[in-house]
Amino acid sequence: MRSAVTAAVNTAVIHEIFSGIQGEGILVGFRQIFVRFHGCNLTCAFCDTPASRAEAPAQYQQEPFAGSRQWESCPNPITAEQLISMIKRLQLDYTHHSISLTGGEPLLQRAFLDELLPRLHLEEYRTFLETNGVLVEEMDALSVTPHYIAMDMKLPSTTAAATLWEEHTAFLDILARRLSRTDGGFALPDRLQVKLVFAEDSMADIERAAMIISRRRSDIPCILQPVTYCPGGPETPSPATVLEAQRIASRRLTDVRVIPQTHVMLGQR
Image (cartoon, rainbow, N blue to C red; front, side):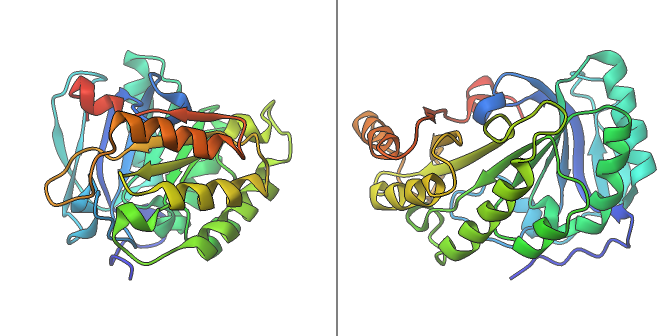
């Protein structure tokens, strides 16, 4: 099921634009400009952005100065021109590593990305797409490949939802094909990461995910992210379970890192 997004072509419905510290994955600690898109096609039990599945907001919040944590309300939808203008404004205050296109699920608004990504690359901004890794047709049709892609593989043991192994496998095949081309100095292991949010009882799922990844390339970084506690959600893994999860994934993969949500520890958005 997909969340309804009513933006016209070349506009997008978003929640916020702000400057922050990347708290997950291989770019953890880098400063990024975050563009949070509205809409998601999944209902994960551990979701930390439930507003993405609610009714499309009439307004979005933007941070006028990088790191100020002051907010201005602006009307949705937003054009690519408006968004790029705001990105340039935030870049004046701090030289950010890259632009994080996150959500929700950004690929639900692929037509907008088809306009935005080429223009950002023309302006020499590095782009970072965070995706749940199931919208196969949208990813395949995307006109320009972002510089970095963080793909989630949703484990049934943590999402409490339907299994998505076939979709994830097809999605990963598309990424392996598109990112294997060495353009702009990037090779696939430097551009792609696969994130597994896991719980106490996720070991069988981690083994299956590692097998799927390794059949494409064993050196794709695999990020094991212990699920952050949320009431009624899956059980946060114990320290012993975290070590076991890394051991299981490392039997097939050469780059397995345990990285919790560090932005939550820091009290960041």
